[in-house]
Image (cartoon, rainbow, N blue to C red):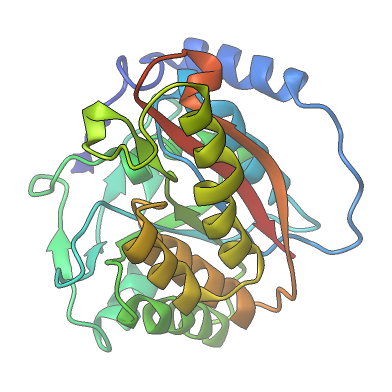
Length: 283
């Protein structure tokens, strides 16, 4: 029993050929940046439809490729309120147009002995874009890897969950990469957030001030500050996921973070409501 790819055909292409074609086009469009001597342990990706943020997300996920492919990709996401239970899909597989991604059931079982998770299954789940839109990218970049999808609420316990995930995986001898899925400021009347009014000045405030502050917190690899920033300034929608990824990457040996790309939906499709997207790697 596989969890269906419910967003295929809307948020991203429905067929394998269309996904492969778009992925190849994105990779060909990415300009090579400075070569790092450090291997990326994880990253932060945005989760809008591929039209808006797919390039940013794929640049990060493709940038996680190293000497050896991971056994498991742990991806933190899900839109949750601070008091929500963390969630996990612990068994089965999640379909993508490129083929299913299997859950690493032994690792999921080990994590469930320590955390009171809300359990999602192939048939009982809440549709959510934060994780699903990344899965074809993961399948394309790491075709043999299994996954652990985790919903991480914007609460300090997500910092501990990220640490636990990495420590448990390492204790089992697994090679892992970690991903935190979050968009940044949701600005405009569509989102009920317009502290700087409208027009070009508001766009610049989002880019140069509000998003910049959460990016700085993430790049400082400070998970507690990341959650605090988002709650106070509404500049990340899944700060628990980002915090969990920061914490896990630190256990894996990451010492620094690097911003690969920043953009907004306004840059792609101007309007009075828009969202910020950042692609960050932990090395």
